[in-house]
Amino acid sequence: MLGERVAHRLAESGREFRVLVRKTSDTSALRALDAEMVVGDLRDPDSLAEAVRGAHTIISTANSMARVLEGEKNLTIADVDVTGHADLIAAAEDAGVQRFVFLSFQGSILESASPFANAKRATETRLTASPIREVIVRPDMFQEVWLTPLVSFNWPERKFTIFGKGDSAHRYVAVDDVAAGVVGWALADNPPRLVEFGGPEGLTRNHAVDVFERALGTPVKRRHIPRPALAAGATLLQRIKPNLASVIGQSLFADRRPSRADDAPLRALGVEPTPASAFIHRVVKSG
Image (cartoon, rainbow, N blue to C red; front, side):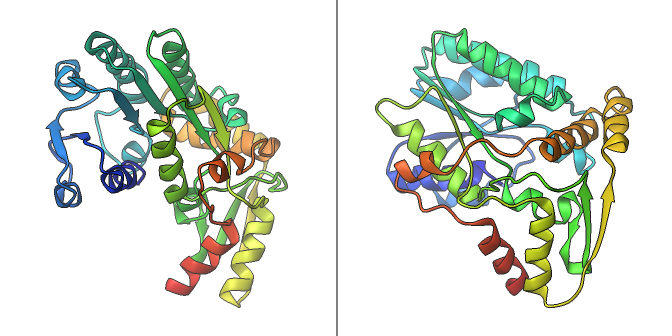
């Protein structure tokens, strides 16, 4: 979702870049960009040395979350998001890499102590202790994830599930805008070591459903999952389904705490970010 957009923007910049792809990756779009490719995996430390050889900057947007939730077996947060990134940083240090751009997520969600949040924290800590210049990127929640059926905003069926009360505003950010920011900071002469940002518009979950309802022009069904139920699920599932526990735990913290960041970092790069309501109207119109 994000990595391919980053690759397109790097190609547009005219910079030479290399892409780490898995054996099962669909590389057709990358081949059209004439990008150099190395086959490997964050779970294979030997493949990482070849991937980072001769590189000045690493951009990592990789994580296990979507693939596990889609049913992929033999894949864990510990293997990819903790050990895998630790091995990647070690390989980068050995190769003399100068800069490491790491895709994390907003601070209030990091405080959820979910397995996924703890993995992001661990990588941030490992990077800040490294001699490599870190650029930790913390976007707010992606529009293309958190305003879609992936997280129970099932607008095609007019059914919406709201985790908690739904009254905390977040600045949902477009993936294309995140990609623009990631590449901008990767190529900047003196980028920030930590940058936290969101989109141009704050929406609560309740308000987001209102926007969908107006865009659809028909009434929709809403249901709320109470906070105590979310807290229980996040705790009980940590050992057996850490990825699902992470989604639940992060949803609970998002419901408790509004976003703290705005879109100023994107605008400083010349990016005109997409409002969440514009995204909603666009996807409804396109069907």
